[in-house]
Length: 225
Image (cartoon, rainbow, N blue to C red; front, side, top):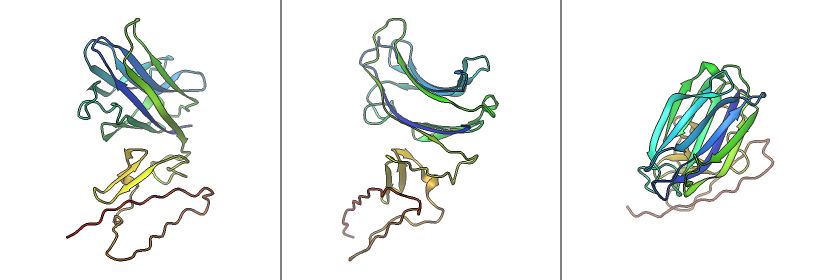
């Protein structure tokens, strides 16, 4: 495919300063050569950890890009997007255009190295460094791959595949798909759901081609004004 979407949840939290390790989510071509991917690596003493996006170097290996960040591998929300309570990540590729999720924001870049090169396999690797103690909590506990088949970011066949969890919050006006913000999926000028005083009827319709009924749940809190 030239149009990939990859979602996963990973946890990366060290229990001691002298622990090391890495998690890599990578995509290769039909020849088994690296195309692109993201790597989380703790390579030195302390808590500082790197999160790096990589692309092919054209020689079978990879090179780092300017999509590089650092975080502290502790349990604090302000320091670590991969603490046990969070860890949701994704990559969207549209041929040579890539969008990466990091700490609540999206970062987009164009990489000529990817132009016209089809992905073939998805790889997940976890490992240690030079025999040092491994990071205490370092794992991937969920991953999804979607082939979009279209050369644009919207109107894909079904952005909410089987097993997706969509949460629409009318109080803080957020739209989450598998815990990642997707506010651009909300139609312009649409109204957020509000339940008026009295008895209400809520109608939910699905696409004509849908064969499996989604499971819906609604939670609301009565307010006194």
